[in-house]
Image (cartoon, rainbow, N blue to C red; front, side):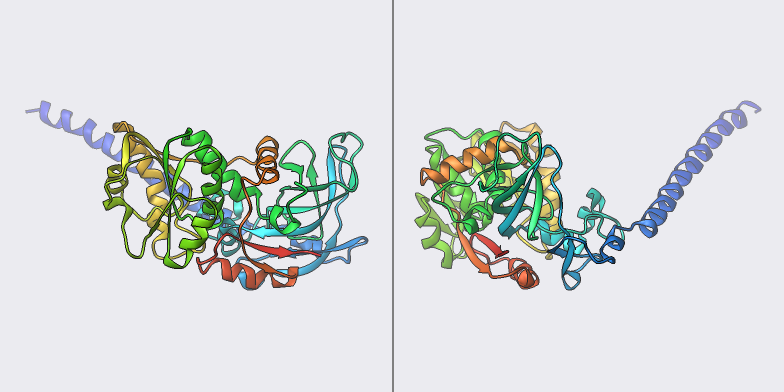
Length: 381
């Protein structure tokens, strides 16, 4: 009779320990989140003083497109390993909109919980080198360059000479070169490094008319692939004009119900299920997950984001692979893209060009409508 209570008491104590431990962890995380949220701030206070050497730049101290401001701030001075660049053109990417609006994933990725941590906007740019640091030998004043650097929507930026910076091809305008970095490197690394694309393979680009998609079509063709582009009716001629061998109008046809099989699917949209995409992959095919379903935040964004993480896990149990990746901005890849542009194999597609930094709000709102064909560019001059 005395044995039964003795066996139950340890179990009850163990349950209480687990319950109180989990409760304590939950409360600690809740407290940490509350403190982190309300103490989250940025360096906007430094913009209060009149700059000694002013330049114009886009700044946002709070989340929301309405909080984007064209403001005079201090012109940067290059460090020993940097170059000072006079920006002539810059472009927007969907990620810019996610950070400006304060999408929660962007906040958790280091964007700032309550206020934006980085108060500058833009990454892609093209311009002219105005000055170089003491240790810089790759560039000289007067060089026309393009690349990627946070805060590119400004009259001047400083960039590391050995990072995402390259000479602009002579046959490419500043507007074209300023649209390249993020989108083209995303396409290049997705097809080459993740999809392992080879000459003669069949590749499908889902979302072929957008910023990344238009680069993906051309880069895939430069590798000798047979390219099928998926887009809407109004973009069929555009996608054909940049080299697609076949085009599919998604408003009339579902590519996952076709009999064609693809070695690589480069998916900018992620509007199909795991099983639907598996059906049109070859037995050892690769689906490259390159996007979250377009610009802005809409009702399907969370579903597409969820698929970016779940489908790679599901594909571990099949010969067909689904790969999500984050592009890395590198000098060597920019130099390769410069060669492709110089040879005419890649030509940036620009939908709209806005004529001043003061139009950035309008440009971002247009991009977030999700109908841009190619890139949206802002002239900084």
